[in-house]
Length: 281
Image (tube, rainbow, N blue to C red):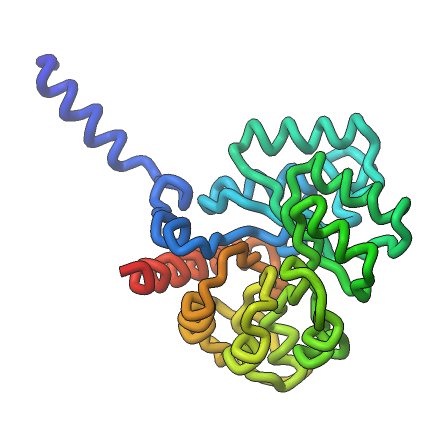
């Protein structure tokens, strides 16, 4: 084969190889807006933390949110969380570094309310590079002070029967601007609350999001591909831009098998990136 023909054949072969989502994803718009997409590892709770980090990389998602209790890696009974050993912490950091993925949030987990216990947890979070602690613990003066001292956000997570927006606002009254809501848009819908309306109510107190679109309102509703449900994903993103929200939106897709997730998450990310590009113009 002639050199020129060989080069052409090599190019055509490379072009025919399958591309991962990471190869194709352009997150420049969301980075410009400051509204960054992360992956709540609970999405892949059927896998280990190490495997979930690999999934994030394959999806082109550069940030992850750890949850307590996920197994660290295949063949190990060690679980991730704030009580990890130094060896486990080293394993987590190495995996993240190797994958080029950053750990930005942790939860949902309780936080100690006394200064000695809480400071230990904030020190752990700082050591891990965590920017947001997602919790259902009621903020107090100690936690308020430590949020300011460490520059770490405390985000109150809502389940269908906990931390509705009015209660979040009441608990945050007079507190640091680093204390606010981890707005779980799916759990709002299960409670019968319209996500865009709740975001408007929480303006200035949205610290983090568990971002979801559901097929319906009510307790039996489940996750669907973003933009195909009744949550109004585009409207939520428009409202967050209006508020000047800077932070992370964690994908937390809790419906279906790993195979289903592998099929549906790229579609969610595509919708997010397309909408972010429109908002960044």
